[in-house]
Image (cartoon, rainbow over all chains, first blue to last red; front, side, top):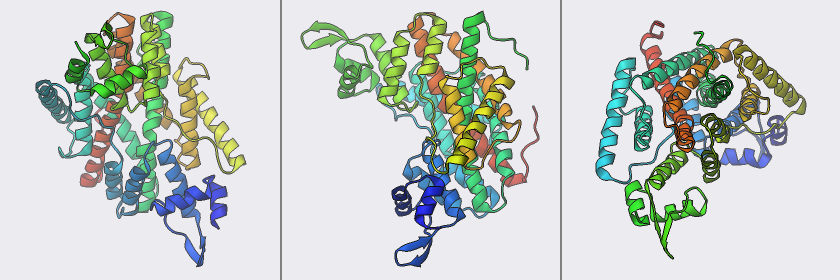
Length: 223
Length: 223
């Protein structure tokens, strides 16, 4: 199809398609003349993915490019999952500021907390993992607000996170066997399911708040 | 304390403090002379909260202001929780584009899916809830990518979300009784715990991927 039809099919304006091409997010079409190119179904799918990443996923163009590069370099199922998991941006807290002594204290306390959690969960990962560093920074930010997790609370959340990750991996693994299309599905499951879980949690919070207003107590725990 | 000391204590530059004042995020200090104001512990706490919201929480200045306005208007424990829950920004997907027939189809399918989920979970909330609308938009975006949840999958995630929300509410409820400080804690629990749960999930995903690479299978489910 021509670029105009690609635009019509996906709802992405021609100017945006050209922009994504220049930014290296979308592969070139097959040149049919000096100024004409032919696009296929893989361009439709890739454009939908770019749109979803940059809207629902909240990724910048640069972050989306990094994720899509990892997708295109995927050569096996598992390396695809690993590469995508590392390429996704990590929520970050600001670097330390203010009172230096207090900062050093909250910093090492947060590190110890993350280390203990990873041991308690029997999670296997290097200390250089961006997720380890991200969690350490987040806990540190909460310590600055005197809003630490109480003992056991973080493990309780981590157990829920483990259950969610198992659902995620099962979801990703049922898709295609071709590494690139598996990696595309991994992006969908990893990057685009984060807002869905967050929205479900917000709905559940809203329900809990309403129940507590109505009855003063939440519904009995039936699990 | 003077503005210079407030800056030193919190690590927030004087220019940023003045900006937050002008933007209505930080209440005025007590005027002690025409150009001097005295700041107290409540300003320290509020500045830390603003910083955490706009960095870890990823909120814009406008969104942070809306949340903090809800905090300051809180007059009871439960209304504080409700107001904060509604004031927080919702992850959003782009509005419909492309093929009109397909759009109408994915739109009503997503609405039906959310309705069925809310009924299955026995959640109490109006259809006008921003979270209902946000989830509908997110599912629609996934449908555009042909990445629907399979039957039962969404409920499985929703059960996890409900457990997380219970932990959240218990966390928020153990804090102070004063509505404004409770609302501040609710902001911390609701807005700043979202990245923590997401990071825990990313850690768990990383662990799962590594286990599957190593053994071809995840560890046995021990729950």
